[in-house]
Amino acid sequence: MALTVKFLDRLKEALVHRDIAAGFALLDKFRQWDSLKASDPLATEFLLDVGQWVSLGYRDYAFFDRLMAGFSKVGRKQLPLESYVRLRFAEGQHAFFSLDMASTVSIFAFILQVEEGILPPQLIMVAHYWKSRAHRVRLEYDAGLFHIQAAKSLAAELNLPTFIATCKIQECRMLFGKGHRKDNFRLLDEAEEVLGTTDDALNLGDIELARGRFVRRLGDYPKALWHFERAITIYCSRFPSRVNVGRALVNAAYVKRLIALDLKRRQNSGPARAADHARFREVCHEALALLEHASEIYARLKHQPGTGSVLVNSGYLHLDIGNIDQAEADAARAYSLGEQKRDDVLLARARILQATIQNERAEEQLGNPQEITTCAFNAQSHAEEAIVLAKRTDNIRILAGAYVVRGFIAASDFFSDWEKAKQFAALAGELLGKDDLDHLSKQLALLKANILRATGIDGTLRAWSEGETGEKSFQQITEEFAELVIPKVWEKQDRKIARVADVLCVSPKKVRRILKNRGLLEQK
Image: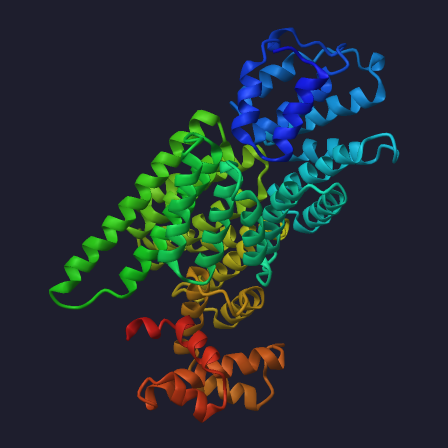
């Protein structure tokens, strides 16, 4: 099939309607891949369209890389403005596929500065979309939301419902990253209603992946795992070796780890304890197997951020099952990858893991006194670096995680700095909402419980009565007081949530949340 206006129109029509099979079939029939020339007035337009199809799963990024190589020596001064802009657009897509988000943002910023009226609205719309995606990968959510809203507005003017649907998926992922939850499920449902009639496996899988992450945050791990497994099934129906599959496998592995940790916390005593521990280790090894599969996918695709995520997750799992040396090796490799790509997110996550490992070594007295001292101060240094790195991103969860681990280090036997531990617990609490009921919120609750046991309820109440609030807001003090009182009243009221709500004149929802945060409902 030759490169003609009719061919391009058919390709664009398939793209608009997300008819993936039709688009792939058209591209497979094209026979001029090796003879494309920038001098052909349709070549740069076709190149741009191919980039969009590659993002929807056509062939792979290496294919687009080879295609772009044929345009690397184009004499740009001779190109008409619109052809030049389209070539730059394709280069922006290529930068995105190469994980060079800084160049992606820069290129699309240039395209969006082209004088109004020169470029067609659809090209401007798609430029906003790609720039938004790059900002999202960089965790620059405010900038990403600005551009996705601009893309949605143009798509509405052009009456492109499938494009609006894909924008909604990106939008809710960024809102989630900023800690907003109100509209996330609605946005995903609306996107699925439109895309559900298409064969767009990547975006449909992304919807399930996002749902899994949202549900996991609410603490419903079995349901989250169901969504992740469904995402894997949808992706694999067309693209068994795409980055998306690796991402879903890592998420599934992570939630399996959280299920394992809950099993560990709820271990019975007596004869059943051995069975519980065996099940805990079994789930951990299931998670490691999922990570191994993801690692193979990322290695084939040379996707370093994905490999880094695998290493961080495997590091925690090895730490959980007592293989601390392997955990340390995984954390070091993850940090090294982060340095290579200057990836603040991966660097922060690796440092949090390293801080956790070093604190574990110090707490478990693994070594002579000098080695224990070194581990304790290494833990403190790693945690403080993680806080600095996390602040460079818009990801409040990573920052909250860094605060929590720093709080545990302050509360360790080596430092026993309870005031500092309280400060970091409060900082983490400010970043987590009432709907955060997952592992991080449980870790924060455990930190607070450790602090409370060490400092004593009487001491806390006495300090408050004397006006020593530690610069906490009245709302924070009220919340801490509720965490002190509600569990005690719950015990006295035969562990009946409704009775506690009646006695204290608070909502049952708040009682349930505080009891969950303290891990008390799991003991029923």
